[in-house]
Length: 400
Image (cartoon, rainbow, N blue to C red):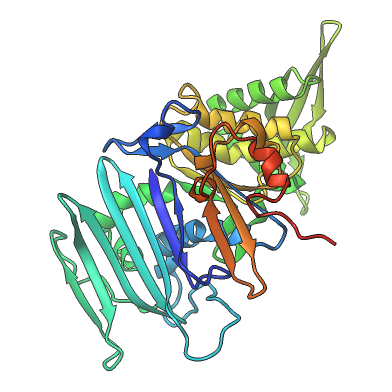
């Protein structure tokens, strides 16, 4: 479970920005509130709103970057560029990029800190909270020698783990099958989204290749397919079910191969009709693909981060999906979602002030990010939707 994360000098996030899932006791009893094993009140859903080009996507990028950096950065060659960008519109000496992630996993509270300077890891540390946060490991680059000052406690053998300048120590430790890295790997593997270190991934879009990829996934997860079928038939009144079928086809070289085909099932006058899912509406296809990523998070726990969540979806459908995270029956493992939205309909009666972030970009091209409840005087009984459109909270386009 993620409690909070922060970024500084990371894309358009010039100043330190903290995205906080935690909430006070006064918010309990409202939709989408979770309680961590340590008793911390936490949001299950956060929505990021703002004008086009305001930097909403950059608010989500730290999660995709950190998951990649810890799981995969050591696979890259030594000397390869670290896949991120500091704030571009600045002069003078390069400044540190700082990322931080505080999370609870298997009853323990951790804080991971990372500082980068260009293509180098300047500092990396992982802390575990007992009575207070104490380091499990810390490493800091000695600029004069080019070596890392490294210290660790309660980690066993660490000498064999390389001190890579362009990779996470945890990522290198994974390749060495170190106990700590193996213990934490499931947490970082449970962070799923459509933003990678190189930018937005096309895997979540309603394109034909993604529809077939989702069908292949559902074929191997029949219980998830049943859930998808139930939801799609609920959302699309013309569908009674969706199903997948493995069929033999001729490949490009004339050889026979197996492909998994998705079908929409329609019932009329007691008869069933099967149509390729690619012949159904774009919204149906979009949901078929999106749920391939969301339902495993709901079923197994973790955090989903989705940029442009509502692509191809009706606003009422978007709200219904969010409610899956609100409902303990459909979210038994306390999964979390953070997403960027243009569907301001959610401000009317779905998200509360503790679950709403706004992003604004000023003339200096810096993205300012703030949670709605940080604005003085905002009450739960306020008509957030109307006040937002009246410009009371910011985060709206400035159109002539």
